[in-house]
Length: 291
Length: 134
Image 1 (tube, chains in turn green, purple):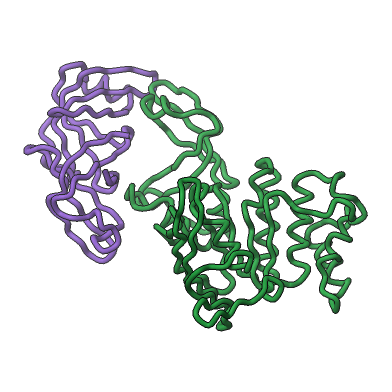
Image 2: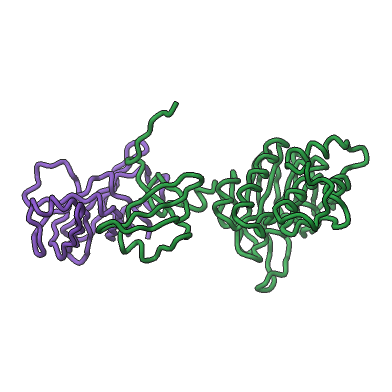
């Protein structure tokens, strides 16, 4: 359990802002911080990792106090055992993939762990390459593997996939889920991609001007109760075809393709590639066992 | 999606389900059954304004007395336009101040002799009605 109760004055894009948080994250959860730029998301990760010191409050992780403004207790970043991945990879350019990983190894660390990570992240074939010869997705896999070398208990991901194209993103998301589970991490992700948040997160905290204005599962946070239908999915429009007096809209939802009959008035605002909500009532679908 | 606005006048709840009555006009009350209760959905409150949504393809059209039918939502309307396709036709209907659309089979349009200015009853099942917060 991470209990973060802190206050910190920040210089936001709109002037001074008070980051005022009271967040609890259960062990083993993958949570996302969501919100506009300057809402305090990255500062939250920096405070948790010890790179930024709050003025007031406490940070407790699994019962241990990492920070207490009153008693001046403040663990150094090195002793907090946190893995951190940024958007811009931050790899050492003069080192090979394997050396980049080994560099993060503690003195009594085991080379076997590096090999294990290389295998899990499917980097074995690339282990002697320098970062400059790698694609963005490969670099980010290396960065993710390197963040895990020291066996952190907490993984912080600051928009790690936002520079990558959709296909690579989907693949990297699978890697993130895999390491989160295999290493029993508590992971905090910053992301603006709602599809990604749905796929990865157990819980979402929505930040605005330094405060959590909403939290819950992705469904609770993003779908809300604006529409009462209980059979709701988000997807992407693949195709729009006219059939007589109606339109047939093909929508990609996760890996499944579904079709929805729509009206001209609904089609007017729709384009191929748009994100859409497909909703029906819980009364309509039929359900049957497939094995 | 057809959308009519009104005020919640009654909520009957049992277990996870509620039947919500929405007064669209003095003469027209529409009902929706939802998997929500006032506890799970704070917008379910008598007096609250709300939108009732239903799909054009879920509208049933009758021309006569329809008192012996189980459908809870019956909207007296006048056809303003008929757009015929081979299999399906689109009917534009007016009811009070509002307009709704129905998609029914072209065969039914012929059988019932539906033309502009025909008086009809548009019917929608309770469980085809969705609610949307304003």
